[in-house]
Amino acid sequence: MVTKEELEAELLKGRELIRTRAFVEAAEALSATCEKYCTKYGEMASETAESYLRYGIALAREVEMEEEMNGGQDVFGASVPKEIATGVAPEAPAAEGGASAEGAGKEGDKGEG
Image 1 (tube, rainbow, N blue to C red):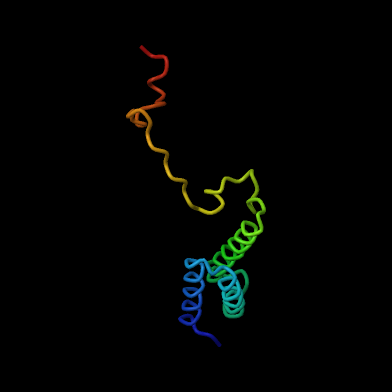
Image 2 (spheres, rainbow, N blue to C red; image 1 turned 30 degrees about the horizontal axis):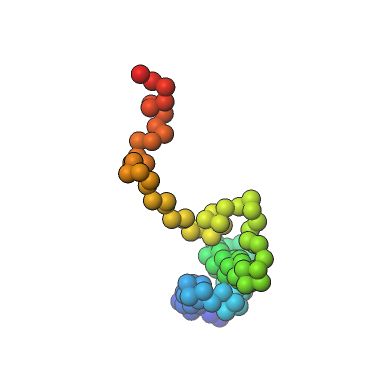
């Protein structure tokens, strides 16, 4: 039977593959890792949660990458902002005219005075 340390090492390998954008390899590796976690702990055990999560991320990113390469639309659709689907925040636009964005739109500034 596989040890906890071996499972953690496999999970780390999958995370590294995702980080390096090797999504196909990550999905394959994490699929096997999920199976091993399920065999050791059971499908619904909390110990399997991260392996499921990482496997799902790898699959979603793999499909998204394939869609983009084929000129298709965003795999998550127009109703889900890309920064929500991917967890990547958009870059903040530069302030125009030297005005500070801070203080703009505060509730106390509207119509009082």
